[in-house]
Image (cartoon, rainbow, N blue to C red; front, side, top):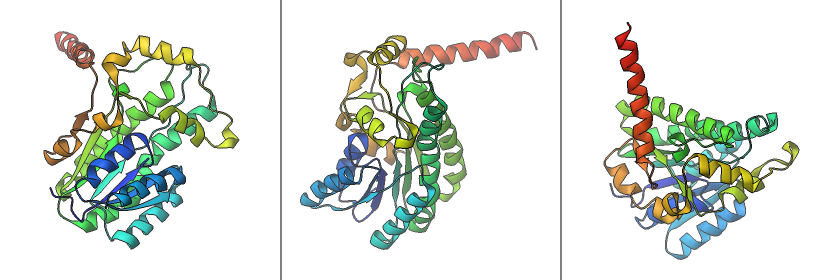
Length: 278
């Protein structure tokens, strides 16, 4: 599809993966609405896009706050009149062993990563439905859905929930011609951990990061910087082609295909054992 004069809304658009998405849509002459809890970063990115000739706005939004997202949708409707592509690019991270994660850790991660996606889609779906034509929702999942590592239970749990939500959403919107794609980014050299820590509400206490947790996670998931970490720009290099072909699953990078195949074989083996003893 041509994105000229189409409107693309991206949450987390101020930096990292969201900003990289904004670049590829801006190159296709789309209108951009960048939403981020870090309003200054979103405005800085929007300013760069405008300097390059794009029609871009920035809005400070807390996706965990339903009213905040609803206000953003109203602002996009007023400014652009429609939404043709919604990138529900939501994710904060909290490392820690399961027995070390606090109630506040779980509440924060799930409220942002899961409810944030739900709130975003709920707010912008009316605009997508009104737009007509070729429309897409891109839900950012995670490679950790396929390669869950230790010390990141809250994050992995949230992304499993997001995939389940997106699977049902895809089926429910198919008859309306709205494509839903799940993006599975692997590790990226971005400010994700830094921005996660900054986004945590003060009343929940400091978001603590222990380098040992990261090392344990990477070892358990068989991850190395060489085979699993790239730039956000490289991660989205095929996004437009994937959307054009309506693919439901978009793998950005990483050498973990063998792990996925092994997991699927184990599931199929479980079926075979059941069928052998009906």
